[in-house]
Image 1: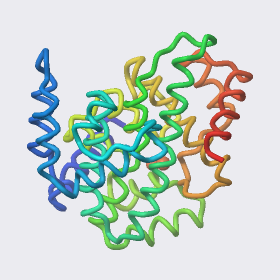
Image 2: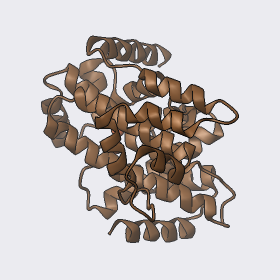
Image 3: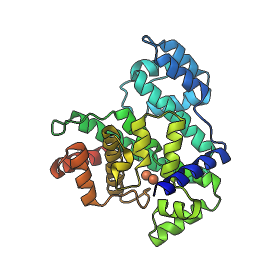
Length: 293
Ligand SMILES: [Fe+2]
Ligand SMILES: [Fe+2]
């Protein structure tokens, strides 16, 4: 088993090199450095982002979208930073940058659009559930909503990377779905690694928070032991719950085989990792449904 994981990691590392997938861009490194100061300069951070017009346009479109629920229209980067706050702002910039890197490496625009629609829905659900859980008096768990959003947004980022590297990936994925084979089983069988391992490596390369990296790593497994520490397992549980909930709410659209946990296993996960019983989980899922419809 350990040998299999090592082989999967080794192969995933090769794939990232083979398609020349970019590392964390310099401006994000500079923003991170500025953020580590006791009094970070907002104009300096906004200036670093504003230099890239394409990124600025995408960022403003995202922060004005439904996901961020800002009260007024935001029309420049400094305003976005002031309204959102540093952590939300950095999450948005990082998300847009990594999305662009993935989009540039997708096999086709259609292929990427399907993955991105799924990922955006899961990100919204993860953020919503994280906020709900953190506010709930029924469970004493605090989950960072930005981390939940990032985990949802990039939990399948290994898929476009595999599709970019292997021309027959899409066809193999369709065949696997038709025969009931999970995506990761097909990937391991044909390509010696799988997209959750690639997500893990890309998350590490782009310095995503550890809880995000490990939640993505374990997102296709029913064994949350893969995720490691408590915070990672909590986020891993939210990710599994979001996938299963969105699968039900959207009537099975844009979801992948293997990502939907057996309802009994999910109930156990929710109780063990988040302290949520079935009734509370049902109430929260109903709120999520209302948010989505
Ligand atoms: Fe996945
Ligand atoms: Fe997914």
